[in-house]
Length: 334
Length: 299
Image (tube, rainbow over all chains, first blue to last red; front, side):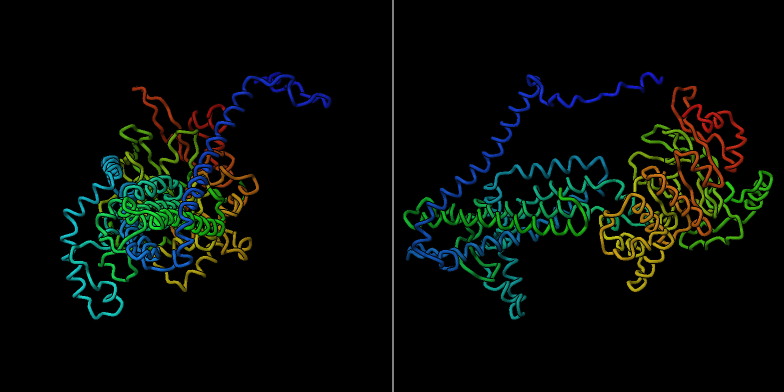
């Protein structure tokens, strides 16, 4: 290195000269096009969403006009007598999703941890591929499999659990009146759990993989065992990612249609008996839409709108909770 | 250099010799080795013929050195010479690196560190580590320091005092005492590194390994960490990897110089070139390669 190369001529800016060139260099045009194209793509999503909301809302108006507030807050869904109260269906949707998450989230987190932290390196890839494959199985296949293979053994389990817990407060009510066929909220919840496990696993695995080695080493260097390291370093790092995974799993569970329609027993009602038959918004749309007309049809479209609003609300709640937790920890929003 | 009482070479040899005559410790890991008497200059680590391979490729080989208690031992050398690799053998952190393999013998207070019944978590409890980049957990300041005591089963009632004590030892308490509940990520880089030292101290270790602890810090923060190292020396054995020769010269008692060379078979392998009293090594290096490095002719 010589002094000559170090001493660059001092670039004194000419205050008269504008920063704008006489003609834009060729790079500017492509930049501009890129900007416009991506902006259009971004706006398209919003436009499509707005159109969906407007179209379903206008179609569902007849239902809201006919039922008023009881459209959502009544649980009496009886097309034969022109009662279209959605509350039982809303409840069924939330119950099935809750049961599904109850099974799927611990399983998914367990698989993700196994694949990222515990399994020998050689078997990690094959396990990931297998789980991803599970995600590609069509919903109806799960439904038919459950119908053919799952509901009969489950109905026996429901019967014995029910008789074993009868008389026990709370549990007795929860497990009372098991369905004879095995079609139940619980059955739908289990099958939906199997269906959302791959996506929840995939997302949790990705966040666990990105846990910096420095964090894991920090924990291990303090004498942490593997489990203590996971609790101290991997979980805190992956917390927001796991919440996102749960939300996406919840979104899937809420919208799950065909499999649920086959195995839930199609009886819209508000009941604490999780071994009993029920129905969800998505499955009743699938089961009844073909026969429906007039207010009935409008009500089914309205259910679709309620589903949409439900997922948006859950998403907002999740983001708010996360943002608050991140602020408390001083983590800049990602 | 005036702050460090430095023994001359003959004295040092005599001291090391007397230490070597001490009876070997029981090879029973379950029994907690008592902290050595500060009056006795004790050998904490003894490395003999240590070689580390990554996926079969030798990174460093033939390392023989002894780390004495209540001293600061510095590892210096150019990038890629394997000094950090050697440091990480001392708390078995290579166990989590895929493909890493440690050969030779490393004893810790006479016990084989890689022996069959050694509890790795216990090893790391006694041999703490501070990393190159400050790596606090995304938790509050208090919870960062409390992590170690918590996982080691300290009672809830003791934790508050332990945290305060560790933060005081790391010369951080006065700066953070009013914001213990705030996130550790809000601290400056130097404060974060002292927090990481406090976090290591809270486990009450015997040894603290430091892997270039000041390389991400400004000169003022570096000076604070170096002062802290001198204070910690009274109670802990420190092994520090540094790129900064002035730091090694200023802060350490003994220095090991490593470098990587291409051998006859064309492999690039790290080696320990010279290990001596810091003053001796920096004023009268016995190897021309050491001299070349410390005078800035290469590396």
